Amino acid sequence: PVSIIDAVEHKRGLNARQRIAYRIIIDHFIQRFIIRNPEALPLRMLMTGPGGTGKTYVVNSVKQVMKAYGSDHAMRYLAPTGSAAALIDGMTIHKGLGLKIENFSVLVSIQNLTKLRNEWKHVDILFIDEASLLSAELLCEIDYAL
Image (cartoon, rainbow, N blue to C red; front, side):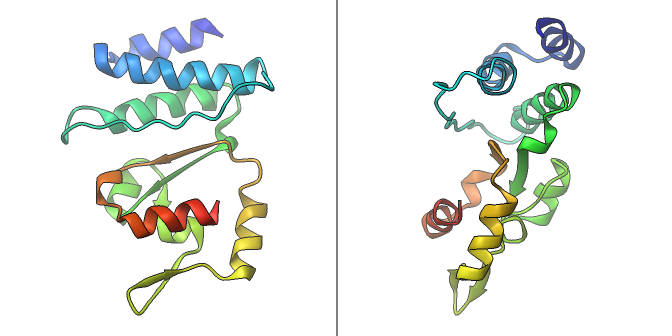
């Protein structure tokens, strides 16, 4: 497994900080999907930094490794805007989670929630790009939906 991971890291030319984030995510991926460690805890990670520092580049590097291992089905890519979603080949948070906005409130119906949880039962990794654009209310709705 190391050869693919190192090859992607080298080919993509990740800088020191990008490599740290990349390795944290990849180590989690190896534990959960390759070794299948039942005691591996979920990874909750927030990559921060100004635009142009390579956060999306790191995500796409991870995506490349997971695809090489045939595990790209176990991850989803969401973003708050359509343009941000297009950059990571994902979808908007509202579409991906079936969220509706009515009277400035975010709603998840019971029917949508059941369907959503069925669709997401094999998803282990969720990348949300441009997280700084999310409101506290939307973060709560994402948590509730999943």
